[in-house]
Each structure stands twice: as structure tokens, then as C-alpha cells.
Length: 430
Image (cartoon, helix red, strand yellow):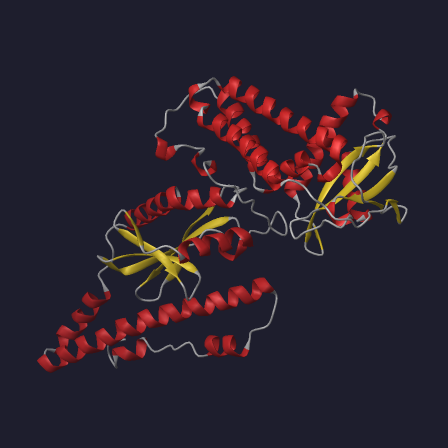
């Protein structure tokens, strides 16, 4: 924890300012911890050491801490680390504070029975959540500047409510517990999102009228946004898992005559068309945990190549990504497929036509029937081989990403990929 604190403090670049203490506080330093608790790591400094007004210092350091907490996914024994730079003179109401720097308790917690009014917490939390919903519902009816003022006013009210509760009843006061409820169920994040959207709209030069189905705020209506967290900025496994989960629950869908669904064996999204049997496409967002949408094709003769790799936008919430999968993903992939097929010009004669051209030279009717049967077996073998090859590559990809060895069952599947398609054509036809 000291390394985390030192690294973060160094990044602030505050010459002449010394760390007075590094403390761990909150529920994990007390007897009221739960699976939802955070490691509240406080870096204690003297705000007076900085040559600016205290309010500006506080706003600057809060902004820096907030950005760090959003950008990093640091855990200690499974609990998220939340950093905060605290003024040495700031009143602190926690009943458990441990000095990491000095390896001793500043305030040692006492185990005691806690009681508070469930009804009071629910009533007060529900009233505040209604206020948040009211601000959102009326966004289109008032000026953006008015929405921002209303958000600021409600934010200040919640802040003062919590402060009053801490001063009068401590960390187990109704007001402080209400604040924790709002933070845990995502309502505070939703409030900040509303302000962000209102501000962006207020400084946008062009106003675009959209229908309700295209509402850019639809994804935060009536839901608790779920943050997407990865191990690092270069890792997108969490997004890939969301994509797989989404398509696993979806029936086969259609866009512009092309059907698409999850290929369970390979863990990828497959696009096909009943009238276009010679070619299929794979388009899986965040494939291999990378922030791209690779669109690839496989032809009936086993040709396999990449059409395009599309850079994906940054998604902060699961609901935001699901909304993109619902509305933007099918349009993007369909557009690329249509352009690719158009660029190819008329597709080359099918395998069937090429095959029958050779068979016609043999003349005898029985040879023609034999060739037709061979071709049928060939097509079936090709389809089976394509599925199994895709499955094998999916297994290999997962093993590489997870940095482990193949299991016996996986090794067996990879080694026994049949290469039988060509043999089905028979002598003289392959």
C-alpha cells in the first residue's frame, strides 16, 4: 500500500509538499466491512504547503484522485483500492484509522452492536433517487445550463446531508448510510453522467433532434450502470466477456438479409446468408481481448482472410457496450460486408459449376451422378472441417491468452482436426 501511495503522490508532482501520513480507513479498518467494501487509502498532507487557495487545492486533488480511481483497477485481496489526498486539518469521522506509514492504529476500532432505522434510510434514499430521475426526465424541457445548476444543487445537498450525519451521529448515522446506498447503487454516477451530457450539449454548436429510440441517454434510463473494469488499459477481456454473454442470450438476428449469431464452439460471431453459400464472415468485437472489431471471411474452398480491423470506441459501462451491440454493431458489420463483396465484383463461379465443368467431359451418366454425390460429400466435409478448424483456433487463442498449457482434452481436439474434404472429391476431380 505504501508503494501505491508513493507512486500516486509522485505523479502529482507537488514540489515542497511532504507526506505527513498514509492511512487506511473506512469499513475495512473497522468491524463493519462487507464484500462491497473498498480499501480507503488516504495520503495525508498539509494543504497550506501549496501556494493556492484551499478550495482550489481540494478541487484539484479530488479531480486527480477521481481520475486515478477510474483509470486503475488495483485490488488488495480482492478489494478495490480508492485513493484520497486528505488535509492534515480535515476532520475525519471514521472510528477506525490505521497508519500504514507508522504501522500503528491512529484510531483503534471497537466492536459494538450497530442499530439504525431501515425505514428512515429507505425513505430518504428513495426521495433523493426520485430527485435524480426528475432531473433526468426534465432534461429536454429545460435549458442545459438549468440542468447543470440542478445537478450541482442536489450534489451539494447530498454532500451537506452526509457531513451533517457524520458530525451528529458518526459513520453509522442514517445520512451517511443513505450516501453509501446512493454510491453503491450507481445513482451518484448517474447524477454525474447527467451533468456531463448536459454540459456537452450546451457547448455543442449543432443541435441534432433525435427520436426516443436514438436518445443518447437511453442507456442510463431506469438502470444502475455497471462499470467495466480490466486488469490494465491494454486489456479488454471484460468487454469480450460481455460480448459473448450478450450473443449467447440472443437468438439468430438479421441485418440486411445477413443472419448473425454466436458460434458457440469458437466463441465468435458468425454472419451468413442463405443465398450466398460460398462465403461466411466472422465479426467479433474485442476478439482476443483487443480493442478492435476484426471482420474476416471464409470461402467454400477454405480460403480465410481479414477484410478489415476496426478500432472500437471506449466503453465505460456494460450497458453502454450492450447498447452499441444492439444498435451500431450490425450496421457497421453489414456495411463492411456489402462493400467487400462489391469490391470483389461478380463472385467467381461456384465450386459446383467448376466441378460439373470437369465432369461434363466424362460424358457417361453414371459418372455425372457419381460426381454429384462426391460433391455433396465434399460440401458437407468442408462445413464440418471449417467448424472444427475454427474451434481449434479458438482453443489455441484462449490458451495463449491465459498463459497455460493445453489440457489433455484440448490437445486431443486440436490434434484430431480432420483434413478430409479434398479426399471426398475422388481422383481426377480435386
